[in-house]
Image (spheres, rainbow, N blue to C red):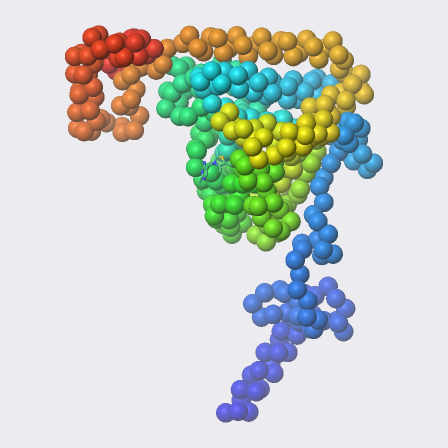
Length: 445
Ligand SMILES: Cc1ncc(C[n+]2csc(CCOP(=O)(O)OP(=O)(O)O)c2C)c(N)n1
Ligand SMILES: [Mg+2]
């Protein structure tokens, strides 16, 4: 009995050793084989590790332009896609975001809507890399700071305003909170408020795309989220799903240093989000998020890997939120004004790219002034127009949930119709309020 079990043990040992020798990159003499259930090589040195770089250093950040807009040594400017015309488009879109931000910020202070944007290079660089073409579609599941992706895809400023004001031109029929955009023709899934829900959803979208022979290797699910959202369990569920049931899911983590008032130093202890990618077996890169060219190149390479490998990729985009979290936040309650002013000056993504354009003779002060004034006029005109438009038809309150109206919804609709008939013209608050709806709030649907 004893003899037979020790024979079995020694033959197993030989097998593991042989297996280890075949797999190991070490010389045969140094190989101690592999564990039976993994390819993990056996070692005799007791060593803990806490770094994915192997030498304990931080994961590097990929960059193309320095702070003065000059390509750094060894960096490749994506010449193929940086023509003067393309660079101008990038720059104009980057400038449009703060213009929208400033005007709508002031509007919100008058109590009209709520709003939040920022991170021009991170968002526009990604948008440019994720443009659909004749053969490929890049489906976007956003958090809320990524309207630049929609604008890059041709969503108009009028439509931005329609959504924020919830008027009858809003394809969401005024049912969503402001900035919770969605647009089917632009392949932009509707945004939802609970943080991180879009992450596992994206892994599901990626998997569905892979299962569909028509869309396999042609479509990618691209999901944006902040480093704060990545503290939710949903981040881990999404990464695990996309890596285990492999799917073309591009994880775009905007690390802007804050989740409202919580600094990222209180969100995680390790080497930030990039360190998590290899834990899930996911190709990962960290990129300077204030360098639009670096973001564009990294996201483009990420999408290539998703398309060709059919697997997930993680891009951590390092930036800094110079604005308040949203229009309902005063960030100077938890960080110094000087810190923000310094960051605005030292590492401004727009200035950096403007300097690059100027160094090529593609931009000057006059064009800068013209662009800023044109964008301001466009945004103000769209804002004024949106303000005058009526809210959607009141009858829309009862539509779109069920294919056929059930009895309880019919009862509610009839009850409202009765109340409107009784009080709509005689009770002053209702009389005034109903005027802002299409058809003066008649239940015409
Ligand atoms: C599940 C959930 N918890 C909390 C919130 C409130 N909330 C809204 S935005 C936000 C901060 C998110 O930070 P981050 O993901 O880093 O995105 P950023 O705003 O920095 O772009 C929080 C806590 C929420 N919307 N959903
Ligand atoms: Mg954040």
